[in-house]
Length: 330
Image (cartoon, rainbow, N blue to C red):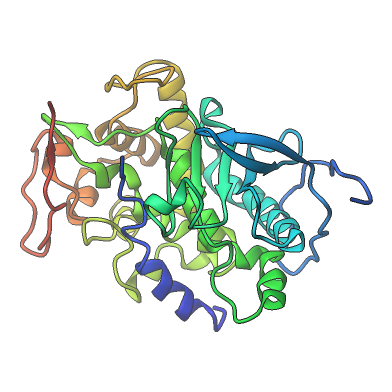
């Protein structure tokens, strides 16, 4: 394990509440990039830019044609072009590695995902920290991050931005968008927003995808670190221990979740989306089929609220904070 992992994991734990909802020269179109080892130098090239507006505010949008994301900066953009190009290059390579882990990308109907890099812009300033959501007036996902995070000098930040292992924060927020529309926390007359964030996966998986942690530690990392999830438990640890879950099972489970969504078999109607959203219980059923055993107890031991599964179990005393206050349906 790399020496930087300790600092990374402590930062990851602090991200558990990141997504609480609130209302040129050379070739400019590089070929789609396959995942590469993190030690492989990543070419940094100029990115095509177009003028757009977001809720009536002018922005510059940087995007390689065909990419499912674009970097956006409110005009006049305060960021150096060298930084934008470096961050785009680093994230583009890291994104390919994340999709190898998840098997699916953000729903096409929510693309391109707008990647905001300035917390003070017109979109991110309402919640000026890392988060991901869908625009209130446009059916499109966005993220807000500070790229690789704080570095004392611009030169250091640019250097880290171009590296795959500097992309934890953007990957974390981007992975949230993969669940948008595909997973609903509605059940039993309440909405469990936290269940939709899936921090049990979204906190650790980007570290594995970016090479910050060894995939061989996927089932055991939770023995050493605080809970990454929203309910105080450790879903990955429980799934591994009780049901034989492995990191290679994540992509098939999310592909099956996407198939459920696109088939229209989700159980929760949702405004603006093309299909109803699957429930957490339906995702549990996917895992049951994939792993060949009932995973309900793993969710219970990870302190997921019983209401998500028809109140078929009672939380153990170890689950001190079983999800906070649920939001009643209106």
